[in-house]
Image 1 (tube, rainbow over the protein chains, first blue to last red):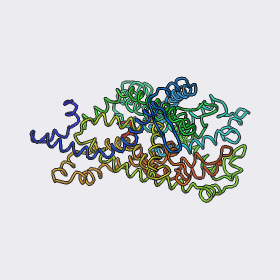
Image 2 (image 1 turned 30 degrees about the vertical axis):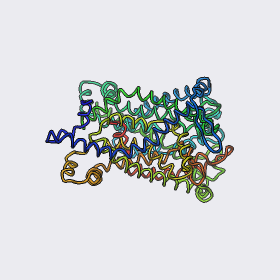
Image 3 (image 1 turned 60 degrees about the vertical axis):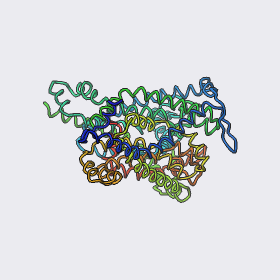
Amino acid sequence: MSGATARTEPRRATAQESDGRSSLDRKFARLGWGFATPALLVVLAITLFPIAFSVAMSLSHVTVSADGFQLSGTTGEHYELLLRSDRWRHALVFTVLYTIGTVVAELVLGTLIALVLEQLSGGRGWMMALLLLPWAMITVVSAQLWAYMYNGVYGVLTALTEALTGTPFQFLGTPTPAVLSMAAADVWKTTPFVAIIVLAGLMMLPSDVVEAARVDGANAWTAFWKVRLPLLRPALVIAVLFRILQAFGIFDLPFVLTGGGPGDATESLALLGWQVMFTNLDFGPGAAVAASTAALVLVGCLIFLRAFKARVGDEETQA
Amino acid sequence: MIRPRIRFHFRWVHLAALLVALFVAAPLYWMAVSSLKPMEEVGATPPTAWPESLTFENYRQAFANNNFGRYLLNSALVSLLATALVLSLSAFAGYALARLPLRGKSPIMIALLMISLFPTIALAAPLFLLMREIGWLNSYQGLILVYTALNIPFAIWILRNFFLQIPKEMEEVAWVDGASPVRTVLGVILPQALPGMFTAAIFTFTACWTEFLIGLTLNTADSYRTMPVGVALFGSTFTVPYGTIFAAATVSVLPIALLVLVFRRAVVSGLTSGAVKG
């Protein structure tokens, strides 16, 4: 414990008097908590407390009436319901596969785009600005845009497939194409984010390392796989973590683009949870969906934490 | 031997960059162009690449006959106020977590990161019940409070990274001169961390501007809808008036496009400092 404290307080090393140090320390610590508490309290009240309430709700009998809302007793019935529910299992499988598929596609495409932009001599700033547009766009708007382009009657992509193959392709009409079409819309919106992070990582790499590799006879391909990619790994790990967790909570896109359909082909965990809670007003089972989604995210976080924790430590020793 | 290879390389890269630009820009072009077409042409088969008759009728529909102006104002109001709150709270917290000797900094930072990535669906029902209890459903303050809380964690991350890069001498001089802690942060630290404040502001604003799930849960009354909620709930199950939607959407993209164009350096450095170094 004392080792950890010493590591996080490098600025105290400059204090001259050894006996004055601890009281000054305490003064600064009090000040620190004074500075940090308002922000942390807001976060605690509006995120952590509701999460805890969600968990409690998922484990209680919930009665909703016109004049109020009551939790009573403890029960595992909502989770039992989930485990028996085909719809939940389908949403879980869909969300996991969708997350893996889109994140892998975004990572590969994003890295390729970053490598192209890195080679660009002029206009890189404009390209970056263009790439930032989909990222900063309202997801609901981009979902409406793709719904329009995929429209089976007058969609421009439908018309393109008709011009190319002779028959108009129905993008959202059947399950597998609908899932892939939604993934494509997602990739369009989020790949730029990955590309920019990777590009920034590429530009921060020490150029002499790559040059040394080239001098040693490595071609661009080998230099990338053997030298630059390993150096890029920390940047990639964080980008991937961000994207995995975002993709896992996907809601906006299926809500607008497919409504979860056809059938429940594109129904994500978040969409299922929301519909159970706010369309069916089944708050108990809905909370169970939400809480189990959050728990899965937590597990995902913890898996990544090892790689991540090391970096937090690094940073603080440098500070 | 070397020269033709470089030239070949050059052309390949430019072609690839062109493809990337097309892939990103084509849907945006389609949205803007469709917003300028008359209603019949928006639903025409085959679609026309350029409006046969250019019209601003959709814009009139969206802003004069429908409430999209109100939705945009609501979004702007909620996003701007939430951004201001996030910045003022996170600046002090970020400074404390970067420089002051707090115990348990690492766990706090990791907890904040996890919270910032938590799926908001886990918050929807309890926040709905909380806001209903205190009468803040369909209000500005309810949404502002939630957006503030949701964006503080990431803002602290960004700001802390910027604070860590500021040389310590400056603030130590201020401490020794006997400046009050709040004045030291406001007068000495923040001016040096302005790029960080900028970046955090852009991130927070964008996140609030695009947020949908909580907006849909808390503010469904027409006069309190934000832009994403307005766009999602517009039209009926049978017809979606795309022309009107895209007119409003084009207007909603413009401020963000402008912001990104002008501040692209800050945004990019935020993506790197917040995400890569984080």
